[in-house]
Amino acid sequence: MDCGLEDAVDVVEGRPEALAPALVALSHLVLHLFADVGRGHGLTQQQAELLCTVIVRDRVRMNELGKLLHLEKSSLSGLVDRAERRGLITRTRDAKDRRAYWVELTDEGARLALRTHSDVTARLDRLIRHVSPDDQARLVGVVDRIRTAESAATE
Amino acid sequence: MDCGLEDAVDVVEGRPEALAPALVALSHLVLHLFADVGRGHGLTQQQAELLCTVIVRDRVRMNELGKLLHLEKSSLSGLVDRAERRGLITRTRDAKDRRAYWVELTDEGARLALRTHSDVTARLDRLIRHVSPDDQARLVGVVDRIRTAESAATE
DNA sequence: TATTGTTATACTCTATAACTATA
DNA sequence: TATAGTTATAGAGTATAACAATA
Image (cartoon, rainbow over all chains, first blue to last red):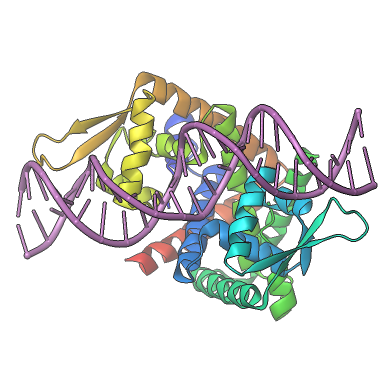
């Protein structure tokens, strides 16, 4: 849960109220929750992320999927291979650009993705129950700004 | 960066402003950044987390380390084995409870941990540069509340 | 008996390099 | 040549189960 960086900042720079270490701690918390929920459905964290990424896009190219998941193309090939072997997704060749493949969920994959997603959401909602609506809205805005900054930096 | 859950909520529940999916997206962003920085120092994300967790505690028992990193004890054994083989950490037996081991950083491990930490902090600071001080303070408070809720739920 | 940790085993995950096929 | 993707290889990460040693 706690990777220690927030304390490191205190020790090294004397800024106990810094946002950066709080974000790191929060991120660990959220993704460990994500991994736990996945495990509850017999999924690894990576498989859970794969399913959720595909389901909201209906179908995705391998190429784009790699960027979304931050994976080298060969790493993604393996991940998709295992999910396909397990009957969760299918690969379909693009008719126009025959180099490309579309990844889609099977019915079973879609069911699993939805269950996983709703569990994650339920557990997150329990955690943020006591945050005021005003703070929640403000926080969503801050996150959007951070994500925008990251997109700009990555270009 | 984007695991897709934030869009899933839109699609499934029609709540484009929900905080939960924003937190998931933010968490992916932060930990991918963490993985990138680690790679820049020849570390995997897990090794980077290990080093940062140890450095702020001076020394940690395997037992507690497993809880902090959310790992089974055998998984941690392997992670620590590889870091030890690489000269980054040492294991020392506790004199009083001879079942337990203390994990400590070597000089090289400490140097690497500090460099990694400062890089992560620098990149995070660049991302949150445009968030107002007021929002930053508020966000730190929200994160604290979320972490408290999570601790209570885990007990 | 309970706790702390390791080892054995079998996977999954990941990157680099070399490759195929299509554009 | 460039792009989309796979395969080969090697190593890292992980959990379960069985084990040893200490409390």
